[in-house]
Image 1: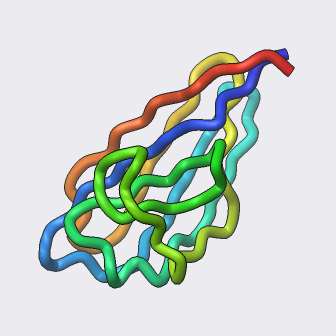
Image 2: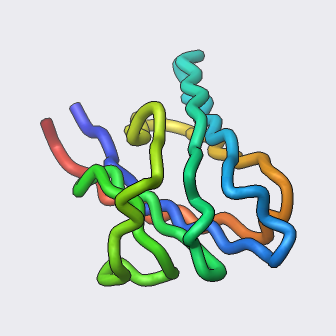
Image 3: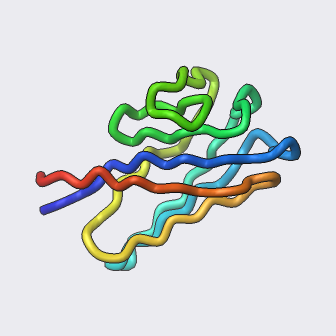
Length: 103
């Protein structure tokens, strides 16, 4: 059995509202929806690191952690097609790196 604990990078503009909703739909019909909040200190991007279970300020895996940021769940991807979306005011781009592993 394979799963992925992805690294998700989100960039945003000046109008970013400090919160967002992350949605993941898997090929098997499973859907996850989680709220991101307290991202007010984020400069221009943030990274959700599911493997480390932290949110970072910036667009690098080594960027400092956003300690006040909150997320309902850290995403896990399943084999097959996964659709990932994020909604919120002022968001620009979304990048996903899966990090597949065997269980």
